Image (tube, rainbow, N blue to C red):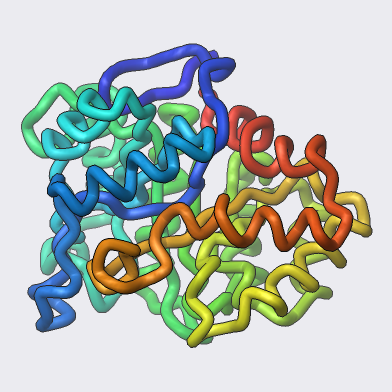
Amino acid sequence: MKVHSVTGAFDPQAVQKTMIHEHLVFNLSGVRQDNDSILEDSPEMDREMESIIASGCNTVVEVSNIGMGRNPQGLAALARKHNLLIVASTGFYKEQFYPSFVFERSAEELAEMMVREILVGMDDTNIKAGLIAEIGSSFKEITAAEEKVFRAAILAHKQTGASISTHCEIGTMGKEQMAIFEKYGVEMNRVSFGHQDLNTDMEEQLLILKNGAFLQFDTIGKNSYRKDEDRVNHLVALLDRGYEDQIMLSCDITRKSYMKQHGGWGYNHLFEFFVPALQQKGVTRDILDKMLIFNPRKFLAF
């Protein structure tokens, strides 16, 4: 089993503390109409990476996909500069961000694109994607185009073995996403549902967990959506139910203004503030290591 990073495949045992859902080099300025939504290899990003490395993080899962202004070569340069394991992604985000051809092509044609990016390389490079992500649904709905992309992601998963990470807009539609995966016979331990720290419906989360999937608490620090204190309490309640083997963590930095260098909380907020808050609630080092190291190893390997 290997994990596929932008600098080549490696043994999963090399994975240490991991941020499971991040953006490092991407450009959504065209859709969002602001320059705040451009992340790139820069002195500010260097300092952000140096801070997470100092906290023991060596793996970042970069979930920017086709149509999100990603840059595989920029990711590879960042990985080499900082000796980081960076896992890149293929797929399509949510309908608002789809390139126009997504509406015109079949699920099979879209799957073929994803398979090529996993087996050959992304954007006419030999830099391979290691994950199908972040495959998204809209707020409280899965549109027809989004359902087609989910089917394409499933086809690509079945042809390559690569895991699937999803985008649940404001934590919604997890149960409905799961129904699609179950309909097409996906093994749920190869799927991780995103933004579940924004989902206050614990019964839905327990249903997903009981079916074997992973959950991501991955918008940590975005207190305008939900207070970190509430995230901590919610996460501890899930851990108390015995699901420490199926939860992973991240911050989902998507704007320059979120970076510490620009006055935000920064990538290291996960390790500097959120992890200590969990420890204060009695979460042990062994459980933290599962969420940050061992669960990502299992999920990313194929």
